[in-house]
Image 1: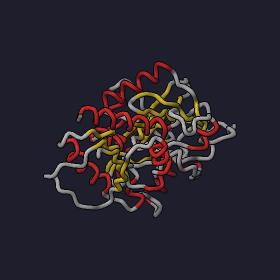
Image 2: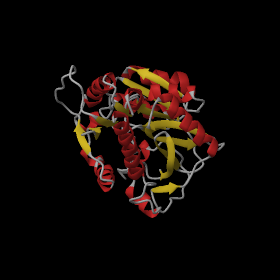
Image 3: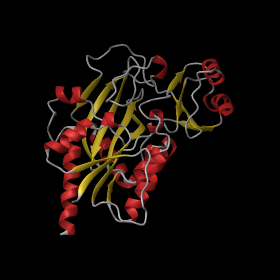
Image 4: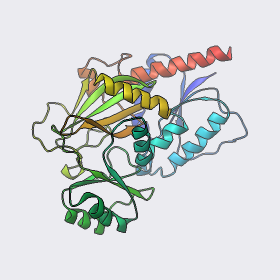
Length: 323
């Protein structure tokens, strides 16, 4: 029987989607991709394959899960299986550099960034391109905001790069990025399913944050990439019903061009109020507390609900074609 196959490497992120799929009585299978063996000459199982492999998989001792997923997706597409967030989406998930190139090609602004390969190249690059201004240092392949650090001075950056706490990027590439002075200490994450806007979440960053809304975890001021203005909201995550219509259209067009089906896209407003997009998360997660406060729980307007309904629709369409 054709099924929905969920490709992932983190069981902790699965329950909300599993619940939504079960509530809709949809047949589905858990594909935990860490290791295994597959006959590439044999056809894959029938059904819909949803790829939610994460760029941060290496932080959970699954160093090669992303590479394994790339191989499996090639096998699935060769056999004509329907893949949600296929090879193009995975390619963006594991590279900020490729994300920014695709965003800018779609007419979306991104923070000024400098690619750096080599630990001893970081400080000279900061000196050459940022002239002593505060900078963000982040890994090209990250996830959840891990490894993102703010440095207000060149001396602080020098001490970190030369010290024992330095974290080498898993793919050897770091980004130096302009520090955006936001009028308010918040970022916005817009959620899309089927390349269409579902809702947005405003994230309070006044105490530092990891970018995964499923993990409400402060990681200190040095990791907070946005403003310093005081005024902490009541809740860390707050659902917003909409975003600027022009930005929404541009983001949906970007997803169409980039062949990304499901994503959480994060942006920040600069001092002039203009949005800059700095992350495309194709392994998007949803905050249940924020959804509950917005009365979205167990509805098709919740993140997991919208996703389960979308996957169920694709499964039914595939079954009709097969019939």
